[in-house]
Length: 124
Ligand SMILES: [Zn+2]
Image (cartoon, rainbow, N blue to C red; front, side):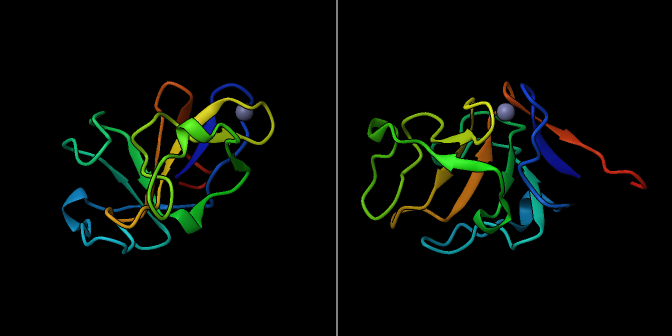
């Protein structure tokens, strides 16, 4: 399973394996989930209020760029993630995900379901 842009179908992740939300790591400044995994939130946590959002490891992202809009990047040591999506599709510029990489949170990316969707690869 991987995530793509609803607007232009650009692929944002490599092939990922769905892992249970219960296995999340909420330790501050650590990876929320291991690389290669994909989670679907089952309850709200931190700044992500939308149950059902897909969550991925920061290492597992591609074709996205960090916004140049600094109002979306407020944080202490990195983007806190509480100011709207801060990652844009590199091709069409749509805001598609939020990177959370601050010193008071675990580190992860969550995708906006209104601008991204999960896609199955051939053979899945
Ligand atoms: Zn796009």
